[in-house]
Amino acid sequence: MSSVIPGSFRKLAICLFLLWLASGAAVDAAATDRVPVVVMSDDRVLRFAADELSGHLEKIYIGADFPVQGNLPEGNRAILLGTPTASSAIRGLVDAEVVGPEDSFVVRTGKLAETTVGIIAGHNPRAVLYGVYELLEELGCGFYLSYNAMPAGTAGSFSSV
Picture 1 (tube, helix red, strand yellow):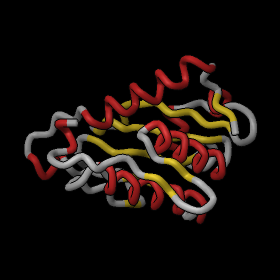
Picture 2 (tube, one colour):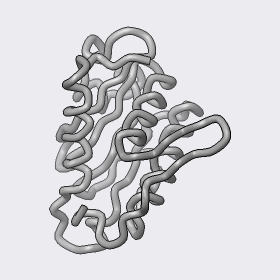
Picture 3 (cartoon, helix red, strand yellow):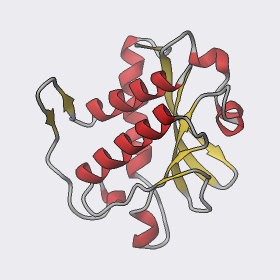
């Protein structure tokens, strides 16, 4: 697993993504606490990556909703998962050359129509899954052979994190 973001900058990029994720300026609390995880593909690995991200984020940010869906919402924020070769939306935000060689991924933010999106894009679906786990590890999750470790949940509004 590799990322095209060089060593010290990779953590910075993921931290910026996390800051964006928690900083949504929605008009009402219901919209603030809902950040869809969008997978514009029928690929099983991408769907699994979205389910993993959604499930773990809901455990970390208690009260927030991260529904998995197949199309970009009309809201103000979303998390987009996929590959530049399979998704025109991701291709418009991340060049395939930027993603890099096999099993590499990139984590960044961008703007798609009126929606600000966090993007986890990979060379292939497995690379996207690696990117999801890297993000979750930066949030304090641990994935071990016999168990998973989760950080203490954060109660309250997701946008106040």
